[in-house]
Length: 464
Image (cartoon, rainbow, N blue to C red; front, side, top):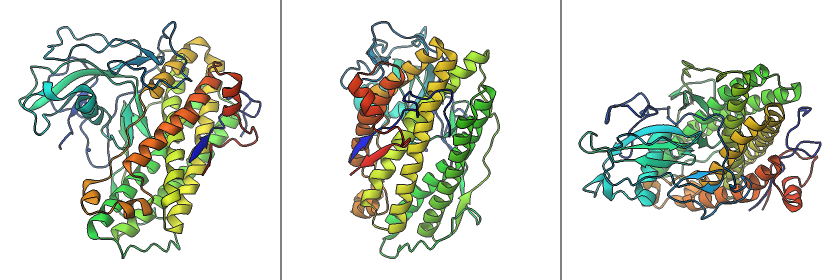
C-alpha cells in the first residue's frame, strides 16, 4: 500500500492562522535520577493504565544537524539522535555506577527505569543495548510498548549496582513518548480507563460478527486486543477535550477549535464501535470504567510562550506522528479484514485519523507562526527524534502464534508484526518526513509537491 500525505493548509502552507474548518519485562520508572534503586514507583502499570515519559518542551537545535524532514536510516549512533543528527550521548554502561549521573542532552526527559533480569542471563551486562536493553527500557518507560515508544531513547549509565537483586536499573533519557493515536497523558503517564462489563458504550448493529469458528484462545486474545483499542479511543476523547482548552488558552482561531471538536466526536464513535466488537468476541457487553482525571492540567509551563511550545511538541508527538501512524495502520489492517463490519470500521477509523493528523499539522504550523524560533526549534527536534527512532511494531500474542491462529488474527483486523513494522516505516518515509520538511521550510520543490498532492483534500490518503 502506497501512502501519500496531504498535510498542508488550504492556502498551500502547513497550517496558517486562518485555517478553517503491562510481570516479565515490567518494571518501574522514575523521572527523578535520585530515585532509590529498585523502589517500586507509581509509574508501574496496572489494568487499563500505562505509563510513559513526559512530553518535553522547548529545546535547542544543533547547528549543522540533519533536516527533520529527511529520513535518518542508519544515521543514529549509540541510540541517540538530536535534530536527526548523530550525537554521542550514550555512555559505557558496563557496570557504571552513575556517580554523578550524566546530564541528559537539552530537551531530554530523564528516566530511571528498572526491569527484572531477563531469563537465561546471569547478569544485566549480558542484556545487549540493541537486542535487549533498549527494548526493555522502552517497555518500562512507556508502560505500553504495543501502543507507545519512547522517542530518541538513550542510555545514560548503568546497570546500577545498588539495584535490588534480580533487577537491572539504568539511568536513561528520551524526548517524549509517541503512541498510536492521541492518548491522554497526565504527568507523562498514558492514562486509560479500565474495561468493564457494562451497557451504554457499544454501538448498535447489525454487526453480523461470526465468532463461532474461532478457538477459545484466539477469541480471547482478539477480545483483549479490541478492548485495548476501545480503551485508547475512549481516552482520546479526553485528549481532544484538553487540546481544545489548550487551543483556547493560546487564542487559536475558531477553525482549529471547530475541527478539534469534530475530532472529539469521531473518537466517541470509534470507542463505541471498538467496544461493540470487543463485547461480541468476549460474549458480554463491554465499556469503560471511570477515567481518573487526577492531576490533569493544561501544561502552561512558565509564561505564555512556554505553554505554546508544550502544545506544539505534544501535537507533534500525539497528532503529526501518532495519528498519522494510526491512520496508516487502520487502512492496512482493513485490507485483510474479512468481516465487512470490521473492514468498514477500520476504513472509517483510517479516514478519521488521517483528518485528525492533518489538523495536527495545521495546529503546529499555527503555533510556529505565533511562537517563532522557540516553537520551531522544539518542533524540529521532536520531529527529528521521531523520524530517527520510529515506534516499535506490536508482536502477535504468543498464544495466537502457538495455535497457528495468525490468519484469524489478520482476518479480524489485526496486523502481523512484520506488516505493522513495514507500515510504520512507510508512513514515516512517505508521509511524516515530507510533511516535516514542508512544515519547517526545508523541503525541495518536489518534496513540497508530495506533501500537498491536492489542497482540496485535507486527509491523509492511501491507495492500494
